[in-house]
Image (cartoon, rainbow, N blue to C red; front, side):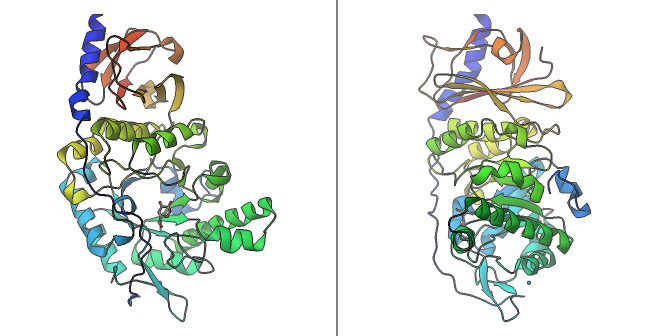
Length: 427
Ligand code: GLA
């Protein structure tokens, strides 16, 4: 029981913090039209193009994306501010290097088919130079259809041209979003043939894959088609460095917990250079409590997910910054073994996930998705169900404390809280 006390105190230390909610407004997705302005243009499946070797050997990409906070309002200045803040807050030093512009940067194509930016992004090359000058990388967004999800220009029939344009600007990351391709191409060309529709989709993603490689610049290629049609089975063969496994995340517990549960069973498809993507982080957005922010961040790290923050960096609270820059948790995400967590077992509202780490280490995450668990009705952790034997020395990655795990030890966990531990030498 002494062990229990020490452990539960560490866990309950989050209790008071968990009551504090974040009050940052998250604007709704905007489809508003933007004034057009002038401007200038197979993972692990051989053969791997030389320009993509580095990406394929890599750990999950880390950075920031504009969509979850700014949606359609994002501007050049917001991207510069985000880059500045990644540096100023220490996030860059913690590993966040991609600054990704999501939808609504696009303008019109000219007579030669060259895509121009709209008035929110007056000079993309200058923006890329600015981001690069900070030691960061710049990401951009498009899709295989005639239009993006926010009804801006997509890359259909301009794939090579767009890939060359991105390379000429110095783009380092492309999120490629299915959206209008379904109606405009799949349904239109093969109305009653699902198999043919799927082949059209795969061919479209491969077309941009080949275009990016021909453009000659290493560009992380991130698929966004919401996890349809078992994308994890075919995405890597057409160049995906990451593929969305879900619909759009929202800044609330139900969305995050639903997405988390949908990841069970997908671990075997991920590995170095090709990752399941349960969507971008909502840490610091909406009314997520600190416990929910911790659980969200911890589990995306356990899932070896791309860690793309999506919050308002200039107005980030110290608590949110501390979560996003927790080096121990980031190290789980970035572990070079690249082995994603699996759900070991659930018991009512409690879930236990484990992840194998390099050097024979292991991470265990225990989530309470229900109401507070007190000493009167604690959760009992079964090490036997994890193939482990206590006592085991571990580190609590949120308190930094050393803890000892014993079989069937009782755990108190506040609602939506996580206990995340790393065991250096599991047995
Ligand atoms: C889709 C994607 C989102 C975002 C928007 C932009 O909904 O899933 O992540 O990129 O499009 O329009």
